[in-house]
Image 1 (tube, rainbow over the protein chains, first blue to last red):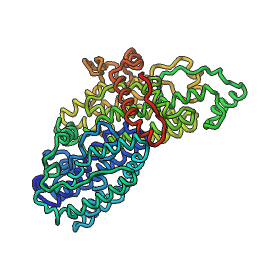
Image 2 (cartoon, each protein chain N blue to C red):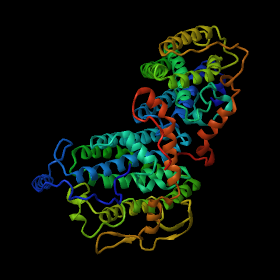
Image 3 (spheres, rainbow over the protein chains, first blue to last red):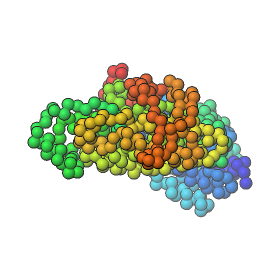
Length: 256
Length: 340
């Protein structure tokens, strides 16, 4: 079994979609460690980036056992085109908390729905692992939703910044629903149905936005639109991947 | 991560000194009773304790920066997770120490503003660069190791909230030290390139670790407020000697060579030669070593170190970038402080 076998497997692509989202989300958020607006939230956000990376590791470990690989090889040693994360995550936030928060909230809301579905799949190892992620993921969604509401309904300045962040990110958010593999039937095999999960995500987001006094134009792009999930990544993703793998590439070694 | 071995001039201890109350206060300290925030204390004690706790808190959140720079480049999932958790701990230590300081009468926002405008300081060791992953290993092993040694003596102090905070911090620092030791062992047991990375980083951090404890105390240190009132319980030179006794042989066991180095203005080693003084003195039981460059110490502490401006600028950037969030939730900061 090889990395190529894994990349040809439809279910593995769905698992990778969430795992790679988690990897890059944890990676991006971890860059804020020590720099968040409030010390207490710095500590909370750091715990969440550790959760995200741990969740990625839990899913990579499942794939590593199935395809005779290592989690680190899956995380660090694929070609850029083999990463299944959406490019929303790696859009640079320039240390704008509104952008960072909105991205995390969009993605966490989808991941919660995704792991719920993966937990029902007929694969005991995978479903057991996903069941472990569900309660932590729910905490993430609640925490991030509360922040969206708090800043949306805070001052005029914070509402305006949050709305600007949503306006910047909303079109890229739709690409989270790109099927992660050309062979995956978006109706039957997206582990849910692409349209169904999008509607559920949109309803959840709009509920929070309404309470926050914010709005978004959330639309499902046509299936023909190719993006990061099918390996056509933006430059900002490949820049982040280069940073993620910098030390490991500089000196190939049996252990780090 | 950082202890409070900073050279600060003590405030005037004759201010607000009711002789009877002072005698009672000093007797309590001599009896090993912990001083609590609601207890009577000389104003000078409050001011000095605040300065020490605030300096320590500043050091924790500045100390998060050099290691934080390497989180996104950590070379495995477990190293990445461990490094985030480690830097998170440092931020958490800052949060705890700012709370201790707040109780001594200064708001957190005032402390953060004083830090980014250069009115207050932080530990000197964070003004040095971390050009490779090897530096992260060495910070966690050598600097956290030094911090544990220093903070164990601070945990033997007299101010209750600070002592309890030190005890908690020291437990977490022990994990940092073990993580650092594991990283150094991995590098020194790895490829030639990894060993070189480890040695080069050790050359950069060994003298910084020696300076960590600060310059020699005054001859009458035990009679001065910091030691008399048990804010600090061991002389800097004694701590440094115990540190060398512990770490010099440990470094050599791991295959590291101890050098005396010349550095450029960016903190990068330009030349090195073996430290010929290194060795166990059988008579004293102590390890001999070459003293670090104390001129460099004073240069860096006065603001001319390789990274002073960068560290403070990044903290200021973070403070300014987050101001709108704090305004929205009604905590502190209503305006950006003036230029330093």
